[in-house]
Image (cartoon, rainbow, N blue to C red; front, side):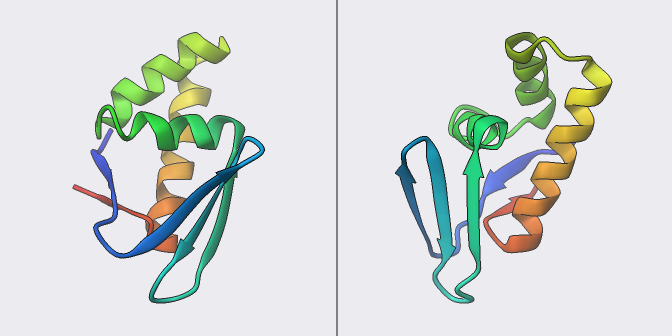
Length: 88
């Protein structure tokens, strides 16, 4: 699995009632993240290794590795597409 890091571009992030709201400073793109997505976002502060993040989530949510890896990859791509993260 690739590495993912939060974008160095300007964006605002605010957590409200268990939901993270991301607003891209240049494009105005809006992204709301909660539940597993919020857990992934928080884990990006610990590591950029999506395989490690996926393994942790598999244990925490008791789901199959395949399902977890696919979900993490899909969410990572959504973050990249919206400009909030980048693959490295």
